[in-house]
Amino acid sequence: METVVSGIRPTGNLHLGNYFGAVKNFLRMQKEFNCFFFIADYHSLTTHPTPEDLHGNVKQVLAEYLAAGLDPEAATIYLQSDIPEIAELTVLMNMNAYLGELERTTSFKDKARQQPENVNAGLLTYPVMMAADILIHHAQKVPVGKDQEQNLEMTRKFAGRFNRMYNNEYFDIPQPFNYGESLVKIPGLDGSGKMGKSDNNGIYLAEDPKSIQKKVMRAVTDSGPTEPNSEKPEAIKNLFTLLDVVSTKDTYDYFNDKYNACEIRYGDLKKQLAEDIINFTAPIRERILDISSNTDYLRKVANMGKEKAHESAAKTLKEVREIIGFRSF
Image (cartoon, rainbow, N blue to C red; front, side, top):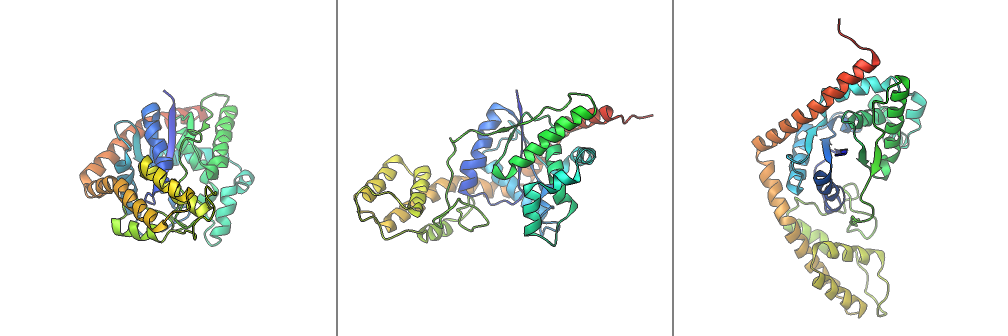
C-alpha cells in the first residue's frame, strides 16, 4: 500500500470550504492508502513565532478533524513536534540545500514581503522541513494545493540529491496527488473568490446557528434576473453552489426554476440555505464540542499517533545516519 503524507495547519476553525476540500480528500485517502496526517505546529512558528495559545490551537484543530471524520485507527494522526526525528532529518537535509535555491522559492519571497520584520531562518528553510516531513515516512504521494507545488518539487529535488550524493537510491521521489476535479470548490459569501478565514467570508463547522443565519442573510446578491434562463452572476452562482452541496436536489431545482422564470426571491433562498447549512453542520458541531471537552480522548489519539509515527521516523533516521556515515564506537 502506498504511503501518503499531508500536513494540517494548527489554526482550527474548519469551514465548509475546508470540509469539501482537504477533509473530503483525507477521508477518502485514509481508506485507500497508508496515511500520515500531522499537525504542523513547527511550521506555524515561521509566521507566528510567539503564538498566544499554540497548545489550544493544536487541540482545537485535532478535535475538529476528528469530528469531521479522520479516523486514528485508519490513519496515523500526530503532532509534528512530537517526532524529534523530523527536526534531526531537517538538520541533515539542510546540509544538502543551497541558499540560492531557497531564496528563489515563491513561498519564501511572498512571506518575506508580507512580514519584512520577521524574515527568519525557519521561513527560509521551510521547504527543507517540509521535505523532512514527507521523506521521514517514505511517502510516495503528497496532496498539495497550488501554493505548495513548488515546495513539493523542492522535496523531490532534495530526495534525488541525497540519493546521488550518497550513491544510494534510498528515498522515494514523491509524486503530487489529488482526486482531480471531483471535489467541490466552495465559494465565500462575499460574492467572489473561495471561502477562507483571511477573507472573513466563511461558514465554520463549529459555528452556532444564529451566527450562520446572520452571515447567510448578509450574503451578496443582486436585483434579480430580468430575462428568463439568463446566466447567473458570480455572486448568485456562489449561493447556488452552496445550495447544491447542503440542500436536497428538489430544493436546488425549486430555486433554480424560480431563477430561470425570473421569480426568484433571494430572501426565501437565503432562509432555506441558512436552515440547510445549520442542519448540515449541526452533527459535526456537536461532535466538535464533545471531542474538545474530552481531554483524555484527545491525549489518547495524540499518543497513539506519536507512537506510530515515531516507529516509522526512527527507522528512517537510523538508516539515513548510517548512509551518511554516522557510527557509534
